[in-house]
Image (cartoon, rainbow, N blue to C red):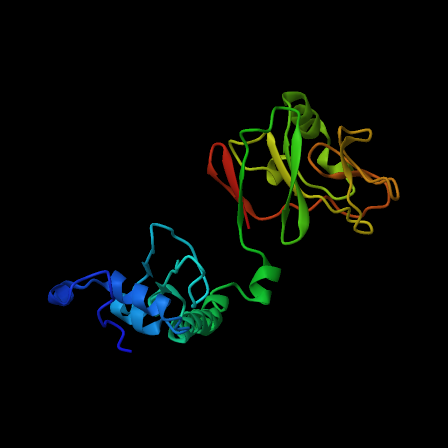
Length: 247
């Protein structure tokens, strides 16, 4: 029987030209056909369609139930991911990873090499937070650097010492920058065995090394103990009244 042959009692032969999709589907269900692909094709391939019989909507098996109800649903393949979509995403990801891998050697070579890091680049230190009578410790070339904001009393005491009496003779003026007499900058490594002395300790209001008892004054000069030399002064300069560059 043809899918859209006239259905007895529903329409007259003269109106067969106006027969709707619903008529065709209804005939298919009544005939007990299990395959509704033809009706789905009439409903429109490549679209999502729901066809309702007798005003009831719902999914039923391809064959109609005892009440003659049925539904046909077609889904476009565009609603689901395709293998081509996956290939596009995978290719894009691979290209991104490859780009980073290609650029990494160029980025890496811009970093300073090991010898440059070991040598140590100059550092700048802001002196503003250091109050009078206080000190801070920074690191340059892996060495501790003491920066002390000396009081007037500390400066006067350091300059009142007879230079000839010192184990390692040096004037206080030679160990500071002219016009910045209150600022003392020294390498915080004891010249005896390389220990790190403690600031504002000892008998001379300077530095004290607890390892073997070496004592330095407020100018960093050795005054007592086994250390043979004064605390070293690193190369530095004032770039402004409140900032120095070490190195």
